[in-house]
Image (tube, rainbow, N blue to C red; front, side, top):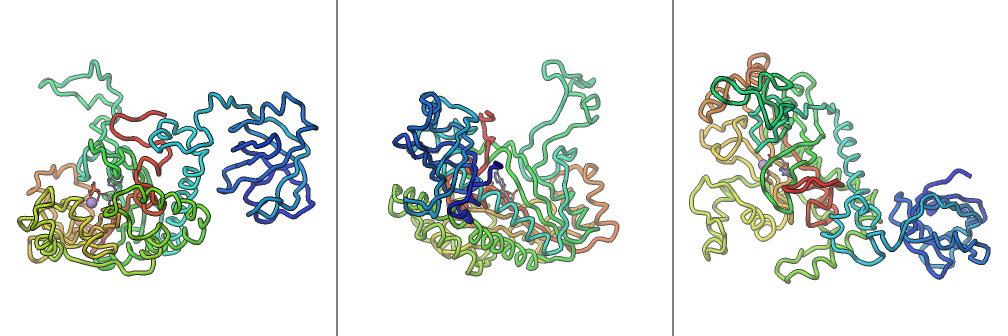
Length: 477
Ligand code: ATP
Ligand code: MN
């Protein structure tokens, strides 16, 4: 008999019909009750075996984490919660497992412990829920942009430009590190490297996405991005997934409108599609919060937090307004900030972002019109000559989730900026061409996918929302 997914059995399985399933044993109680999980849903299927009819040797192999194929008849469930359970008539052992050696016991393990077992942690309820939500979010992302008429473009992962301007890069090279060819002046001779030039892993697909927006109109990327920053935080990965829409004929306001609509749309979809996983994650989140000091606890539960974001407008505040709020804030006056807010133009640190979002406004905040000197070269200069049309979206518990801007479409202004910042103009020849041939106002943003998954699942550490995290000193698996 062909096996079906447990999710379907639980949703539509009818009493007195034959049924076959396959999955992994979560628990085996009283030599009689197998809780089987196949990953299709958070729920296990209760399967009842008649142990008197079983061979001793097979019985011994029904252990936590063993893989089984079960055939039998669906009967009305005696237990609570589920309509049906499987009365097992035939057991096939697909893969035995040694319960003594299997590292994940049916007890609560710490997330840190499970990170060391990243190849097996997806068999826990927490991680399978997180990964199902992650998948649903990714689908909703594509769905949103496709419905809005955007085209999905794939920008290169290996880049020959070192002017993406978003952070430290990883080198890509096939040269022998022990004995690289050298130029006459003693530098590494990248002319003899694979690409005939120095190359890196991309930190952003934005520049290439701009080229495509100025032809296809509205485009988005959704792919891996790499940053070699040594920032060991709960919000940074060395390899993460970024969604970067880029839109021709959009100004900064259009950009902010789209970003807000995008985030609320995907959250709404996941709320309705991942109800069971989110209810479980909410319980986990609430327990976690209980162990924090009162002042640091989230004032809302997980679902309430998501619904709040879906139902309320984001607060839009200029950098200058935010600066005034922070300068006059209690923690600033009482010198509680590690980085005091003293003069206009300082970059905002995560403590300042958190104050604005979690203490002052109590809702997601879009900060815009940042000082030019703390932002990238491609952002459109305002008439005040001091600020640029940048926007960051800040989320409770996460901090920055989106960074974006209206792009500088005026060739002379852009060239001047590139020179001021000491960037090699030759490298950007093709990017400047976009301003030479039919340049139009355009805008875009980057959303870190894992930060969105963090917000939606309530997981505190970004390492727990990607299957195999890459962070400083860690690329196991
Ligand atoms: P941060 O200030 O938080 O380090 P950033 O300003 O360097 O972020 P951007 O260059 O604006 O980030 O990138 C766009 C988005 O990508 C960010 O808003 C964030 O959601 C995400 N992001 C950036 N760096 C990382 C990282 N190291 N790991 C995971 N997500 C990241
Ligand atoms: Mn940013």
